[in-house]
Image (cartoon, rainbow, N blue to C red; front, side, top):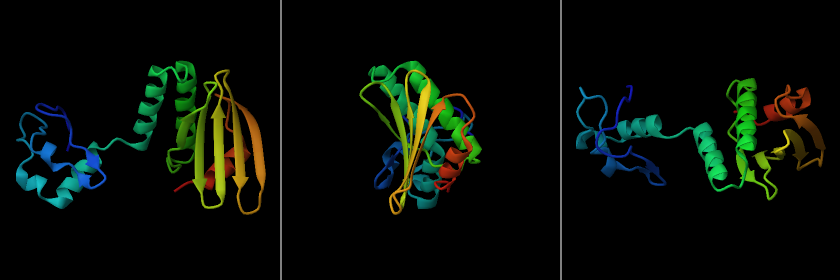
Length: 168
């Protein structure tokens, strides 16, 4: 189903308890299609599918987070743009199997991406100057690795190997 227009109310959304059905009664798609009825709102499988179709992806959530950080002036637009570009490169390199990183703003305007999976911890710190720094830690063996990186250059092979540890 292609959602072309929302005519009456905001899109339905997910809560911790699942699909917000009250909003679904007012949600409209194409002018040829009727509003989603209470029958659909009461159908758990259809609710789940609609929620999946309308839920923002992890990449969209990251993009919104970066936009909010720009608006609050926690990070410069160019830093957020570099961060989004490098995320897209890393995601593409992993055939879109790399989970979206946790992201945070550092006190001096840097952005920090982190991944954690069992004993593995990986970071990419993105500086406003266009430099980045990869860091890896194996919590069991205390193996550490780090590497400076010019944002926009090819991602170093060893960083790619470390990122593969987090692919789904």
